[in-house]
Image 1 (cartoon, rainbow, N blue to C red):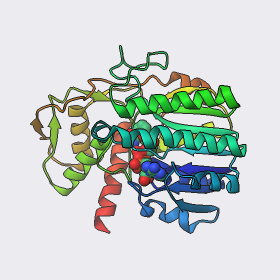
Image 2: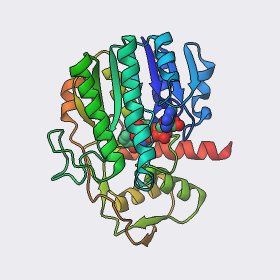
Image 3: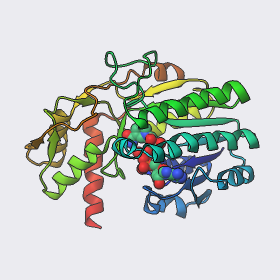
Length: 314
Ligand SMILES: NC(=O)c1ccc[n+]([C@@H]2O[C@H](COP(=O)([O-])OP(=O)(O)OC[C@H]3O[C@@H](n4cnc5c(N)ncnc54)[C@H](O)[C@@H]3O)[C@@H](O)[C@H]2O)c1
């Protein structure tokens, strides 16, 4: 298949590219390198069947590339992914996450690309869910510009299906973690804790540590994208998470154990706007895609810590 990946140089996008290339697909990557790194694509760029283009997804370069490339599917992951930045600069967030998505959808429609797979956010589109684990039937009540933008972008994906017949699926990802993650954004807490503990620096838990999230390993997320390439998820919005709510305090203990460091975080006042509890019921993804997370939090943390240690040595 010919697959175009936006956000290819980012944390999740680069893992997706690596897997697609390994599976023999012809892959085109797009990224403006605003947070992504070319180093994440080092392996892919040495492989046959991969090309990389640096530009902003809101620009007309996208249409030109898609018209030339004619992919069978676009995996759209380029985005501004920092919730706090979306609060500080909502216009920038909207431009990238909403206008960028509309530009991707328009390029697909104008050039006859049949399908998109969109990286939405299960951790933010529901806001504070009425109960956890939350199913896709819960109302969308985002509590940040980032969550609102993801909810809007999903709605555009659905509208383009009805209006133009562009097939699409929105994957509502939990807090994704794993190698190559930068220590900011939605799920940066794993890399923040792990990076600090590996380096022997102190760690801070904001609030009383009871707020909880659904952590999902990056390879499991990549697997969910792959399962959508052939159309199994078309027309759906699917949660992609572990179903398990892990408190920040418990996460710290698990990361400390994986590192072999003392589990002794400092505590600081809570940060405003933080949600209390999110966990995602992914049974719809299991039924539609046959997807289930394969990597436990303990294993995923061990792999992340191994990667951090290996990259520190270089
Ligand atoms: N990491 C998570 O826990 C998580 C959870 C839910 C959803 N998501 C979504 O998944 C996607 C990938 O997230 P990530 O964690 O890999 O973050 P990331 O920041 O590593 O990746 C995003 C990539 O998009 C690129 N980008 C940003 N704006 C761009 C623009 N205007 N034009 C072209 N490229 C642009 C960045 O340079 C970066 O490489 C994002 O859309 C994010 O919102 C992430």
